[in-house]
Image 1 (cartoon, rainbow, N blue to C red):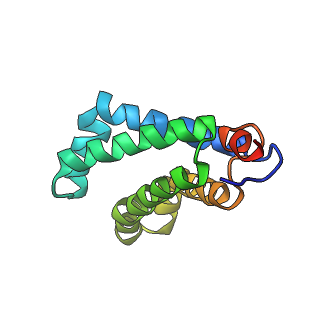
Image 2 (tube, helix red, strand yellow; image 1 turned 90 degrees about the horizontal axis):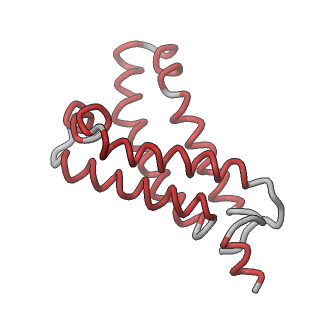
Length: 136
């Protein structure tokens, strides 16, 4: 739970936390667009289970990141989700539509992946529960 002793992780942690919290909630609110329907379109078996499983992890880990609790640990499943999204949606886009279309469509995936790597390396920073626990 050790973390950098500064405030530099606050904005990346809040951005990633809000994005994943929002995406997880949307999978429940709009299952045909971003939840089960999307997972079926991608070709996952057990799409209903996987969509809700992923949504639950996105919500739980997003909340953990927002408060800065177990930041490094919470970032890891989200990094796996991002890697899976890239492999299942962006690689086919690269093959079918070319580099520039893939680059355009993957900008958010790329940004979230880089921010998650940052959080895994540097932790949650000073304004976090991780910091409060480790300093006591």
